[in-house]
Amino acid sequence: MLQIIYLIAFTILAFLAIGNLIRSLIGFSISASQPRAMNDRNFQGYSYRAGAVPHPELLDDLGNVTNEPLLIMKSISIEDARARLDALYHNDLPRSTEGENS
Image (tube, rainbow, N blue to C red; front, side):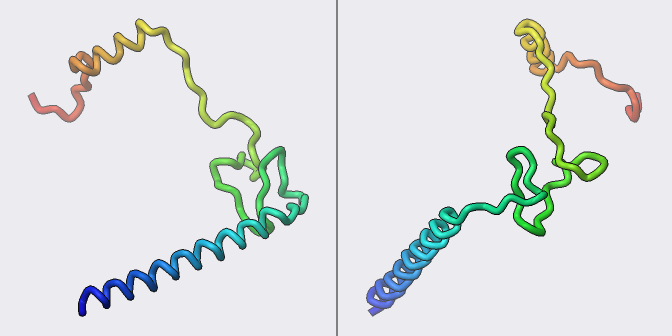
């Protein structure tokens, strides 16, 4: 008897999940087929819905969307990288003496 209850419950859950999947696919296809309106918030590839606020890290001091790289990586040679990794592995990094009681 308990197996029948489990079978019925999981069958109902499966139908609900498949129905939700179909509704999501239909909603997605409808929203994808509608052209996006060009408004003043559209800025070089960044498009925001009306009333939506972009993430604060994408804004400059004046509140405009930035068009510059947000991460700058410094290039180092392979030997320098290996030396730094070896120093980390062997704990050869200089330690600060602040807060240590010797």
